[in-house]
Image 1 (cartoon, helix red, strand yellow):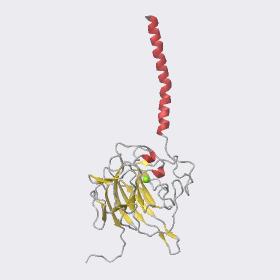
Image 2: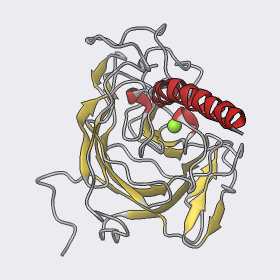
Image 3: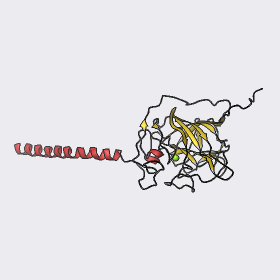
Image 4: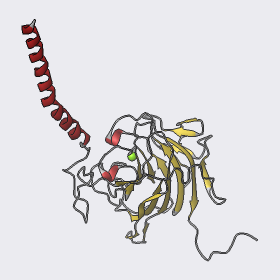
Length: 292
Ligand code: MG
């Protein structure tokens, strides 16, 4: 009996010892896994800084908890064009100019997996865009595969849409980033499944008659009411949207284009939802009033 007890005791001590040794290793392994951030260290350096394009070592933007609501459900001003009121996709088409086929239900539209992006039939040069989006809940995937979509202006200039709530990726590719160029000033993300807002003020680039760029594209972006891009001047077309600027290559302007641009919503094979989208041209001072 005593011998058996001693054996059991010895066995229990061995188990305890093994657990005590293994526990720190397990914790360490989990911590290492938690800090694994997708990205690249062999990409070109971004101009004027010390970070690679899509650099996982770049500091993660500070987290800011946005207010409970900001412009969720904001009714369109009188001079805005409503692009989606929750009922139909008549203002949108696919990239071949055919009617858009994304699913519309319960006041939102949802990206169709491998159905391709959709773009507005209309075009605007300098504009204010209101758009609301929600990533899947429960979330799926990690890094760039977690609720990825985007507002792609003219298929050239991407404001990233991604689930960046308690989820890390390379900072120049997270929610609120100008993709591959400018991380958001802070991370103002809401949890997956919650409606989030972008209020984007965009100015189109301009070229002179000689084909010289005389004004860069520019964007101010409010994410859930928090400024994440402040009059940011684009380095050019963002990478990965078009063959002209392949993924993981530095942004550049690919040549003159008309100032009036369509607005595209990206299909990145993740089911992201959109609702309440409207756009209005930026006003100009000192114009004669159209009112009698
Ligand atoms: Mg995207």
